[in-house]
Image (cartoon, rainbow, N blue to C red; front, side, top):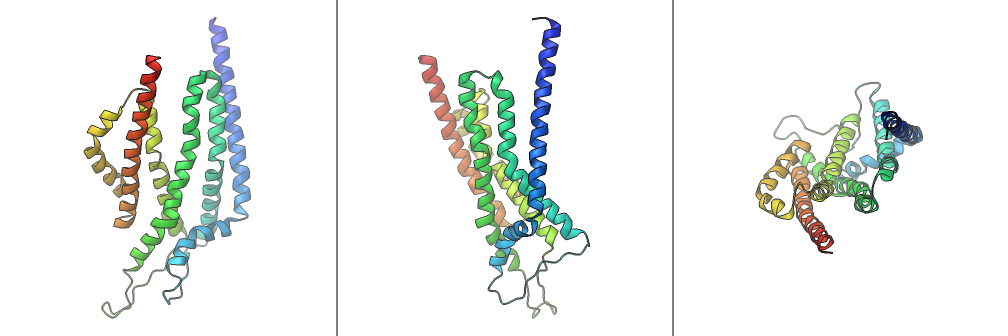
Length: 256
């Protein structure tokens, strides 16, 4: 194959990649605009754990904003966050359609499950935050409120609109990305960078790293840190099991 043919093939690949990136961007923008019309309802959904946690405490609760543009910008963030979350499978599919023609059949079979598993694991991480971690963390933080008997003045939470959203988004992304651990380790095993014995021998170091990562990725409270660390430890053990399965499958293929 000549140099000109190689260059032409490279240019066509770049054009294909550009086209798929543009399609993904347009899809994201369309969903973003659509989500903005429901931004108040979407934000209300994210606030529900807080609303449920304080529902029966006998105190009039509210969310406040201290800058004129704060709620507007918060709704923009909610809309983009939701649109990105919804369009992620579409973006992954565009990436898959771009790389699939250059893969062998067995490579396609090997990679496709990871494209399906990635958004599922992210969703599971987000659900864990929404239904378990956030309610527990909110109750923990609210326990530091004071009626004023010992502090002369009452200490009461006045949650800000943007700060609450930032906390929820940070936790959802932290848990969602951390839940990709089995995918990452399985892919590393497929290319031969790690094996099950390697993962087993490093288990004690991984425990320390996981708790350190949980401390960095979550607010400084034991609820969210332990809530992230324990699922990651479970996922690490599941990763060792999945890596062992990959090794056994590779061994059978080599013997065949």
